[in-house]
Image (cartoon, rainbow over all chains, first blue to last red; front, top):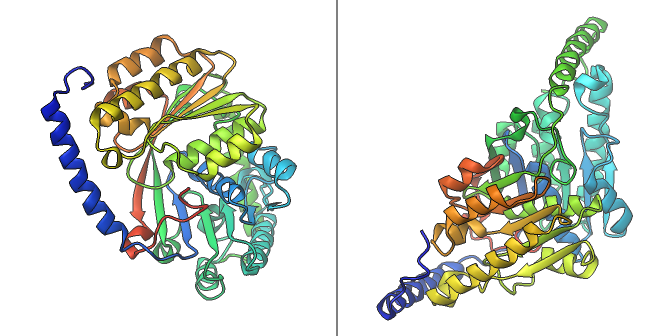
Length: 209
Length: 209
């Protein structure tokens, strides 16, 4: 596949011309992209990368000195890498709120699951309302919405009416409700093509937590 | 949608029984997931989250004290959040190698693009061969493969024959070649459902870089 050995001077010239044209078209297009806006970002689907990408964006905010916050809806007290890193290194820029109590088949108590989800959402609203905070990650909130533990219509109304215009809110978890997808600015579906779990490999440090 | 107000004691009992059954089934299933293995992980597709999820996994490794490395194939000298954070806070655990020179329509020089990609791959091989390093992120390497600037067959052979068994290698970028997808342990396609770029919003700190 590599072209390494076969570039003639003609190839070089043709490539340069083609790329100059591409750059000109791209520059024109980029001139139309001037807006800035706090985004509602949804990561959904059954593939990997929903939470880790949210966490990556939080780390980008920290790198840029932007205050931010994480609310975890399901994972509870798990000692994840993200939790450890944020609480030990960056507590001044990013607050971390583990509001979950584990998976619903761990708690086996629907009232407790609902109370935990509601407490997480109450905390999330406070954080989102604070205009100093530039990004709020609602990790696994889509799961709580899907189970009906939180009201999707209320969440959509809150983000529409009360989110400060420059605040980014990131919602992760499979099965995001249609109403949430419908109001979001950026939606990515992570689709699983292959997963090592099926080959008997367990969740591993660095990769999954 | 919220079930908050309508839980009867019977509901509670039924829920608890259902979840206890689910937990038992899950526990049996989890007992079969005991393997540990250095994974070849591919993030591809046109959606957002490929690089940020790779970056998130690198941060997880750092949180767990696992030495790791990032090789950037396209982005070159851009002052991204990930670069700033890794080089200023975590240089002891994670080395950062910006080997790209920008997009191919920026350089407009095919020989230079190929040389940069090849230099990035040479660096990547050194890092992957080092058994102390637990994860190597090859950011945007799929782009270099897709353009034919790197040889996919050589990369697949190297990862198959020379990668230490416990080292994770993460390859990001749209258009991952079939040969790479075929040999990977974990493949996620990030599918774009909606992107604010189309609404005239530019790339923003924290979200895209």
